[in-house]
Amino acid sequence: MNPRERVMLALNHKEPDRIAIDLGGSICSSIHKKAYIESCNTYLDQIGKYLQVFTYWDDLNSQDGWLISPDIYRKIIKPKQRRLVEAIKKKTDAKIYYHGCGAVFD
Image (cartoon, rainbow, N blue to C red; front, side, top):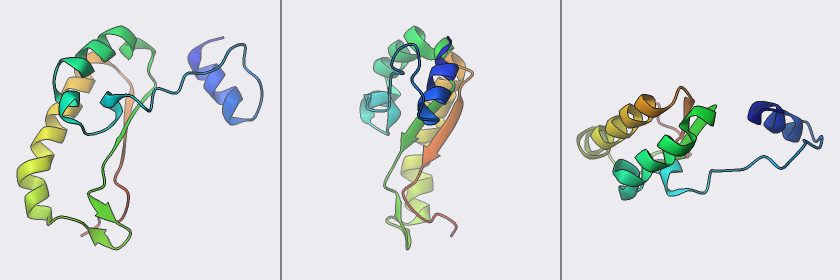
């Protein structure tokens, strides 16, 4: 059984041949200063070929809108996110899922 089959069985409340590992708690799965340096590269070197989805999230916004101004986001946060996404794409073919904790439409 491959990792995707294990996850799909677990999502359908069926028992896989072994437990699917949830890697969402790692420091690479969120915007963290170490996510931009060696720890993320090491992590992806070891398991990047097995990933289907790379998830990370930020509290940049609430349900009512931005917690910081979009201008500050573009100036300070976005360049770091861009570097992280580029590093991820170099190491894995996984889809990237970004959760922003609210409304970012403005």
